[in-house]
Length: 224
Image (cartoon, rainbow, N blue to C red):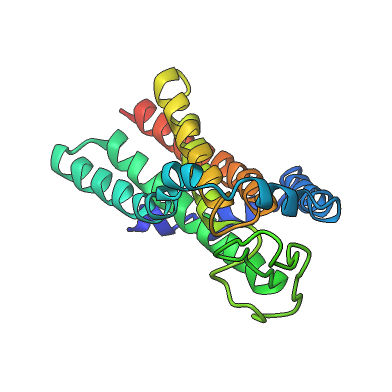
């Protein structure tokens, strides 16, 4: 577990250091634009369909369970096969998921955004897409800005891209998975802007975490 937690605080800090902070600011700026131009509400009213929900709603469950199952499975497989590369991938994905959860929860604790209505009846709902309860824990950390599902999905996907830069198939599948999760939660439990922000912040996390564990893998190979 030392390989998982020893650099966790440092890597989280690095997600806000240097040019990375500008990506966070971009997520905030895009959210402001999407919210104030009513794009969130327009997206909401045009994506409440049974067909979309049938195809995309499973992303809520998948995006919640895979960040747990995949790293644990890789760590177990790596331990059984005595493979440093598999273990390194498992640790990297686990740290990406943990970092994504911590950073998104930190933001949620202060933004207090109201989540979308669960059921839409045209003409009977009030636009709540612009409601934020800024403060501390005014709306908890399970809802709101940014989407944790999307943040974690993109953090893990970009981590894989950094770890396996020459594996085009894996990279396409990883990004496709992250996009599916983002779209899935944006038509169900999150506003569109929350998924957009999650994708940006998650990509920053993946770049930092994936970069660290890729260098760790190269260092191990050169040591051998």
